[in-house]
Image (cartoon, rainbow, N blue to C red; front, side, top):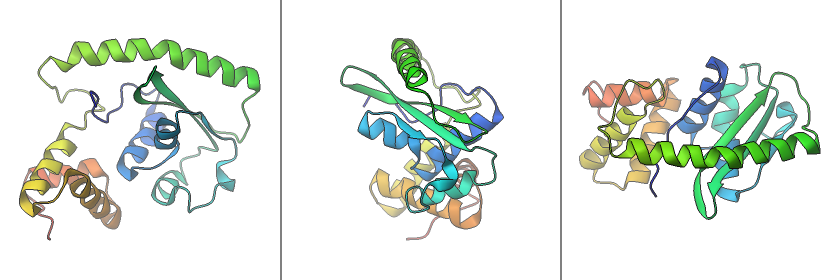
Length: 184
C-alpha cells in the first residue's frame, strides 16, 4: 500500500481530535468507510451501540460531536482513506448533501494522490501537526524488542495508551525516548 496512515488536513481542533482518536483506536467511521468503500453516516451518535466502536466512542463521548459522516477516499480500486465530517447537532444529511459530499470527496482524491506522490520522495518531516512518524518508529522498536509482527506491535502500543489514559502519540514518544519498554 503506498500510503501510511496519517491525517492530511483538519478543519479545526475538534476535527483533528476526532481523526486522531480514530487513528489511536484503530476503529471508527473512517475505518469502516475505508474498508467498505461506502459512506458511513451516523446522524445520531448517541444512539450508536458502544459495541460498534468501544474505544473511539469513549474517546469522543464528551467532545460535543453529535453526528458523524465518513466518505471513502479512492480512485478506482486505489483506496486512500476517508474524509470525515462532523456536526455538533444530531441530524441526518439530505440525499442532496450526501451526493454533494460524495462528489467533492471524489474530486479531492486526485489532489490527495498527487500530494502523496509528491511528498513520498522527500525526506520525511516531523513539522506537520499530523505527523505519526514517531508512532511508526515506536512500532518498529516494539517489533524488534518483542519479535512480533507489526500489527501486533501497534496493537500493544494502542492497548498501553488506552490503559494509561494517554494518546498513542504520547505513548510512542515514551517508547522512542526509551522511557517506556513494553513487556512480552
